[in-house]
Length: 286
Length: 286
View 1 (tube, rainbow over the protein chains, first blue to last red):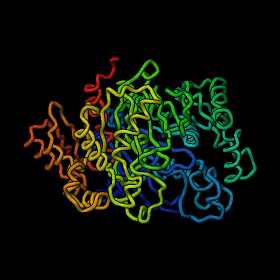
View 2 (cartoon, chains in turn blue, purple; view 1 turned 180 degrees about the vertical axis):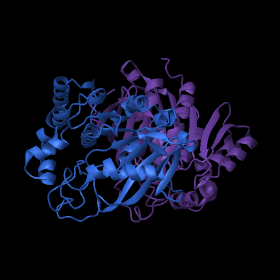
View 3 (cartoon, one colour; view 1 turned 90 degrees about the vertical axis):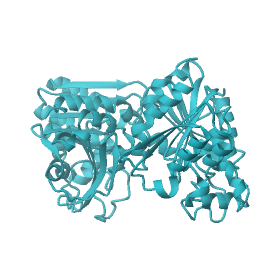
View 4 (cartoon, rainbow over the protein chains, first blue to last red; view 1 turned 90 degrees about the horizontal axis):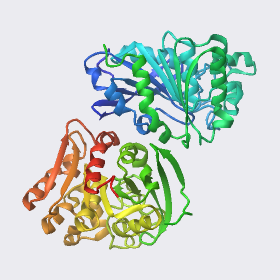
């Protein structure tokens, strides 16, 4: 672990430290920011870590300021890493034209179409490069890693966990896009980043991955508000429920009466998600 | 109570409702936004209410998204009202030139100098107009009102509570400007809004008010981080401690080792402040 890495900001919070760091990333060909919360336990040794993937338009800032996760993470001894949602500053034409493609909308894929393939590689960045960087510089235990996220980031968390089950021991999501192949946000993103071959899209579709590979011996936790304005058109939790039922995957899908798509919804139930991950990652033990 | 008032936004949060409203305000001569959290208990009758006053550069948004107050307010049955920090859109020359004067920096005074006197009346807005509006439209109990705030808003809360002890039964603050007469932020604001007669400033200086009137039979709760970059130059908790000691006012001043001036600091200790107010306001009873 390097002792010299300087945070862009850091604040004591519930006895732990909420910081923001930046590093030069190879996959995304630009400087990437990420949030890191280290609980008090991290001063005594490596702690389990959960990666949070944010939704459309977010940066590393939304979750760390709005979710209220630090209180329970400090209690449980969990680190939380929060990457940005796309490369920034590559300057590709059209990059900033829409809220749902390009900047703030990397969709956690490795793009294969030009120009996006030259940096829009958020799948590899989040799955490989960032965890290696974090483990090299901070007291987290890579053997005890979980992942969760919201909306586009819920999609990312599900896809990454299902494809890398040896590396992520737990997964949960708030209001995830469960099948980007079958919703407008997802179809736009997958066509734009990957091209028109829908077979290539299956590697980034949680329901297709469950169909193809299953997800044995673990439970997926999902919270979904019933008054989420995107539930019918974009999120479609029913498709995940059906895929899990067909594949025999344990899904704990909690429909939350009256809740919407906001961080107020996330804050309300973040506690339960953190405890879910802590149990799977043996948080509190060493 | 009007049933027709439409919120600009509202979200279910911890079983209560976090909303933002706007209304045409007389004192500030413009449309003012405010945040309102109503706990689940509000569906059964009037609940006690705490006013939160924010610091420099803030709007009604900062506290409601970052402080994590809803969880405990929902548990305790407390409503929280969060006004903006200045009028918006009056278009006075120089209004937007500095972060510490004009927009976002009303300092909770009634300005007497032109042009500011024509709308920069946040003292009367927060103390009279907004509470009357809130009590007329929402299920809060004006007989059980407390007030708290941060930095410039901590100053506002202390001043308003000391000058209106019959109306505010409890007061607390995070990192308050305790004596605007004796710090750069305060001197600039008071001179700009009130002119050079320093005697007129005393009505807006918590330590001077304590000297002049005391604050008997109640405890003031203040949290202050030791690594707050503004503590020596602007906040000066020592001046409040000394004024309270001389006047026999009960001050519970908690110096928090390693904490800074941010909402991460506020979030860490908001729970204790809400419980302090709930006790004083008999929250949970009817």
